[in-house]
Image 1 (spheres, rainbow, N blue to C red):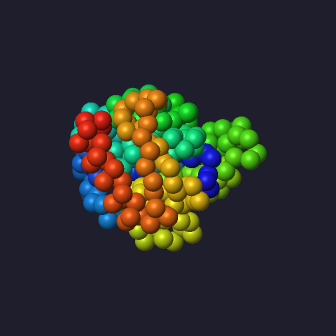
Image 2: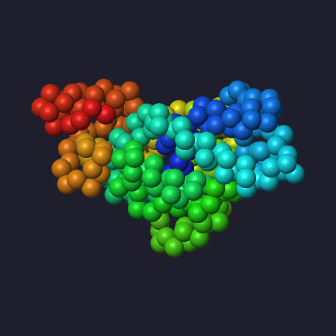
Length: 265
C-alpha cells in the first residue's frame, strides 16, 4: 500500500458543489447589480484566500466588509443546498480505503458545524477519524491546522492529500504530504495540468495509485451508511486495470443485489 493516511478536501472533491457555489456567489453579485459569473469566469478567478477572490470579483470592502460578505454567502449557501450530492463513487472509495486500514481525515476550509452536519447528512461521517476545519465562515485556508495535525502523525506515516485546487497543492507541501487533484472540481483542467502534481479523472482512478501492490482482496463495507458495520464482502481487483476492475465490481455488486444483501448506491 502506497499510503497509510489520506486527507480529503471537501468542497469540489467529495461534494459536487461547483455549480451551486457559482449560483450562490451570483446571488450576492446580483443584489449589488454586479456582473454575474459563469463557470468559465469562475475557473479563471477562484482562488484562496477567498478574500482575494472576492476582491477580484469587484466587491468593495468599503461598502461591505469581508466578514459580512462571508456570512451572506454562507447564509445563502445553507438556505438552498438541499439538492447537493456527493461526487460519483465517493461512498465506495471511502469504504474500500477504510477496509484496507487507511486512516482518513477531512481537511477543509469550511466551517465546522456546516461541515459536520453535511457529513452526517450524506452518511459518511464514520469513515473519517478526524475533521480538520475552521470555526468561522471566513474560509481563509487550511494550512495552519493541517500542518499542526500532520505533525502529530508517526514519522513512518505515508500521507496523501486529495483535493481539487491550487490551495490543496500548497497545503500538501506545507504538511509534507503527496497530493492528487481531481478533475471536475473548482479548478479548470488547464490549471490543474499546470500545477505539477498527479491529476485523476475520477475517484476510481485512485485505486492503483493509493493501493499500489495491494490490488487484491479489497473488502469494502457494502452498507455505506453504516461504515463501522462488521459485515464485509470480499472481491478481487485485477492487476490495477481500472476497466477490468469496474467489470468485476459490477458483477460482484449484481450478485449481492440479487440476494438482497446490499442497498442501491
